[in-house]
Length: 274
Image (cartoon, rainbow, N blue to C red; front, side, top):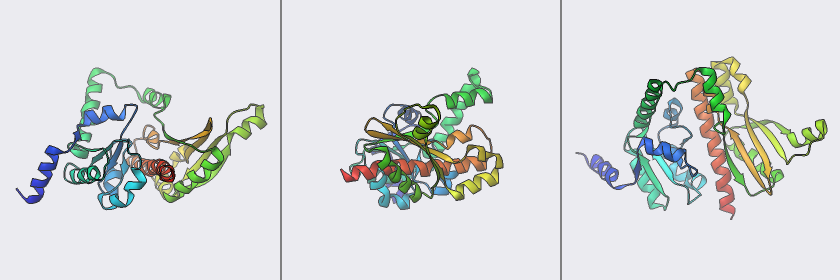
């Protein structure tokens, strides 16, 4: 056994880890972990754990403070199967981060998901396409969000700034509060919808499936909640429930990874100012 294999085997046996089923439970809990894919970006686009962010091993150290500023959030890292995730997990723990690795990496997660799908079909739990879409869009599964201790008027430029860093421009800023007041005389808290567009990703999606434009741009809701602001990002994975086109799925994976980085960067930027 090589020295590298000896090291990885040692880390596997001594570091905290989770199985795919344990990760699934954590992700569905009220305190979901930050799941980090340390493979290359192209690997992430071809298939990734739902709601994970892409942070390749080579870029990790430079971005730890940006994405892992919350010391109370658990971090789960994974790679293709084994090796990189154990090394990264060791590094994060040494830096005081509550980290664990996914046993078997992406390969084990993909096998677990396939097994779950097979079991659902055997139980007769699979719905037709319309029912699946209705169920998916019926709860809060189509967004992910963060809470900022700022008024809306201060939060909006901050959101736009971080969107820009991930290649998103804001095509429109819809003031729903003003519209409701003007049109029907209703008074509601401050509520804005930002139409965010990454031109490169939008071009890829439209080239793959022109009708997908009906689902664009990626809306970001910025609304008042007392003296704080809720920022909700539409999860691009909702798009994958409406099409089987693998190219659109790849774009959705990349868009989701970028928007989740925006969400994390917003939290980290405020934590750094405290």
